[in-house]
Length: 176
Image 1 (cartoon, rainbow, N blue to C red):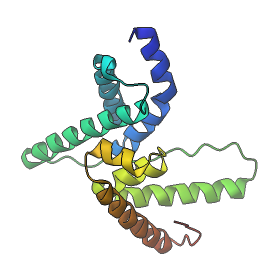
Image 2: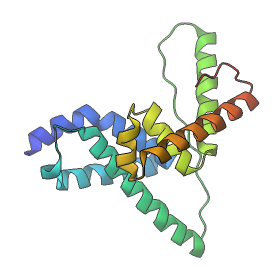
Image 3: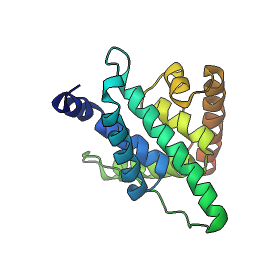
């Protein structure tokens, strides 16, 4: 694959990959670093990308793998010198004219983000891949290299946990 074709490929998926990195890393700087590592690695391995299959899944798998490695390194470093966690926020951008609707939507998004941050990584990552990246259970299983049944179980547990969290936050319109 030549550079121009890789750029076209990247243009299709860069927003999805960056958003996934942002959800994993939970802060902008770490997300940008993860995104750059993912793209660099993908460029180095561009000959292996199969466009007949789902190339987006390939990029998400790279990002997930890079994130797992970063988490492992961070846990080893934390034993030596603990770091303080950084806050994660997503800017809700909506062009709707109704101010109250925007405020409700922003409140819901804030509650969802808090709920996502409260989930363990084992529950949070499949939930993000399924609902934010629109991947199937089989695709998620391939990315995370775990059985599809485990993904189903984790999604079920994540939905239950999110529902309870949102109910505690006073948001009763949550639907599974």
